[in-house]
Length: 455
Ligand code: SF4
Ligand code: SF4
Image 1 (cartoon, rainbow, N blue to C red):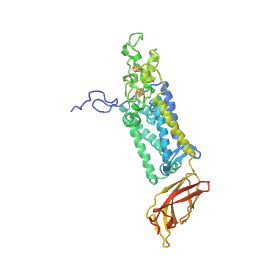
Image 2 (image 1 turned 120 degrees about the vertical axis):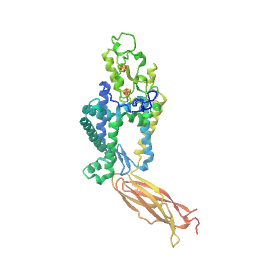
Image 3 (image 1 turned 180 degrees about the vertical axis):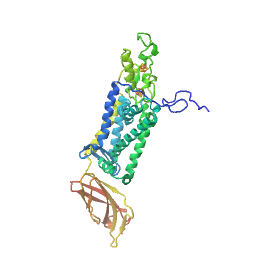
Image 4 (image 1 turned 90 degrees about the vertical axis):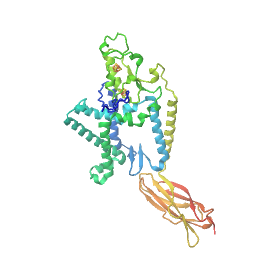
């Protein structure tokens, strides 16, 4: 039975019958590819080196799942730093929005790991092992390609894991049995499998279908944002390749050679205008520049431009987005810097108690429960002393001295005896001071629950 056909073009990566159109983009060597490769290899080196870099004795970047903390630039964020983490997220989001408003999909084409690894690592290896038409290569070459992909993915997955468990832990795990670290080893295998699937099979579909940032482009870009675009006023009407010389003949500069389409990693024709599938990789610019050089025409028929410039309008740097996003970024970064600078070496939080809040002792005194959590944010063990202050008629009956390891927290149960007559409406406030040897001290107010009626 003939499969149903769509009436027209649906996606650059689909045939009309819905089957996948496998792309085998050619490489256009040119100034932008050279620069993108330099950026790409520098980013790969940074990705591999960053887990080893230390700032102030701490990792430059670590999302420590075991200790439940995030280290960014040497600053430690814990679950109790929710506000600072929110500011960090806001700063990153506004920086991404600003970069997109100014430079369009420069992230996608130049710095996204998907593009960097696919275009500068996996595809070059593929072309080297199986040639430009890999799907027609011999089985031996294809096995060699998948073996190389698997080894590379496994190595990258280990580096990836280092961002979550630290290089020291990873180095120890590497020399131990995987069965001693089933969770970590499973993550490495899972990430390896995902990379193989992505870089070996899914490829451009990640950008076109799966990436949320790619889907958001239509709202993040404006008419002035930098895009890769085709100058239709100069290029149209196209001339047939066989008629392209001499160039003095009538018609636009585009000779309809198809070079810009043949190199596109997402399979689109940039001459159809700005499309969601365009990742701004500039391969079509390099391809078209080569053609223009051969025809002795000026470069730039396809180039970095904006929708307004293509429509003959002026470039405008100041727009609502380019004012609002930097303002938001400045506020978030300032508050974050102040918050990180003002972070104490210890955090104290009041927690809920379990069980009865109080009991009445035989002599009529009330023994009430409370609970604190003390988080030692420093890199050294701290000794804390918990005392009652400005709380007449109350006595602390529980442990007053606590040792907390570096970057650890402890739950501190408190039992406070208080005269019954001091409870009003079933409650009374007391004040607890927490002090440590490194000069930290804080007073927290606790509300104790007690009997409603004085006897
Ligand atoms: S590479 Fe340039 S000349 Fe060739 S089809 Fe594309 S736009 Fe036209
Ligand atoms: S249209 Fe050009 S810039 Fe956009 S993805 Fe294709 S080759 Fe890259």
